[in-house]
Length: 138
Image (tube, rainbow, N blue to C red):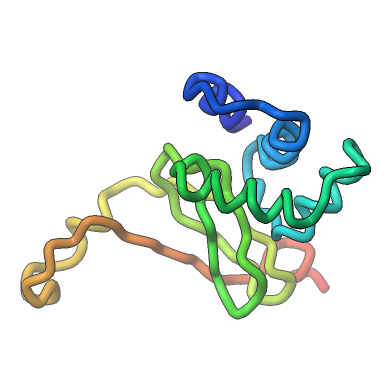
């Protein structure tokens, strides 16, 4: 389970009913929902929540560095609450399912100096692609 709610409380983030329900929907392991999915799940808990409030809250959480905006293909952006533990993504090429993975090693050190072209590298994003078990079995 991610610790999104605890992190937000620790920051003193003003926890309105709308913000709380968005954070609750996002909280958990392997959560990678689109904004529309966040809105649909939030509306089940708080029917009066607007799509604009969800989008604004997601934007604020991304700006705070509390969630990641993930684009793994040409599909809709997804939101990942696992923002404070380095990880990569495993993506199903058929259905788009996303899982967080934590491989060993340091991908920064895997890039030789000759391939850095003078860049000072600050971050690495790795996406593994394949078929999830249900899609592979289909």
